[in-house]
Image (cartoon, rainbow, N blue to C red; front, side, top):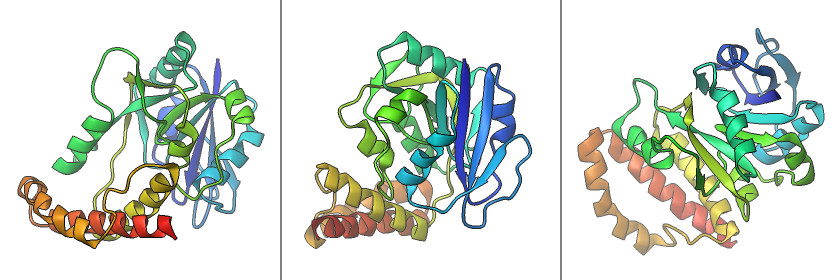
Length: 250
């Protein structure tokens, strides 16, 4: 079995060493964009123009000659030398179109991030079905992506691709991945992702201004749990979701 790990990166990626240390052959391909690196030890670097999450990743499939493709991000690190092999074995053992790994928070992650990651990818000892792939850590058969390419959307390409497909969740394969929360980044991400989710047919979480105002009391518990700074993060997410729903209706 052989795997190509594809990492879009606008900075030096953290997880290349962990991919090189896997107990199966993993070729690491870094898609350097923006101010990304010219060289990365242990990886091949291809300079690319950023064309959005979907088109940029899919274009890299033309450079892949391995049986499997592992999509990840520049701040994720595989835990254990058997992470990728565990995902390959799970993919082949079940009738899955793709499989995803468990995401573990960094040691300094805040309580909100820890809770959300645990809900998104909970602990477990067996492979179960989940609702979508997540390009923090997803394994595909290369032929699957040749026949069923990622859509050329700016973001949420993983959610779009998952519609009507069987995705397995492999909690025994783990990657270290979490972000520090900041209002600006949370606003931008929520705005962009929620616009795409609504275009997919999901109901708007914050469809209008009255809904936003009704959601404000729900901010109390997260702020109590994570501290006063979390108020700005929570507001940024709500406003981003509201603006995303407005964009989707245009």
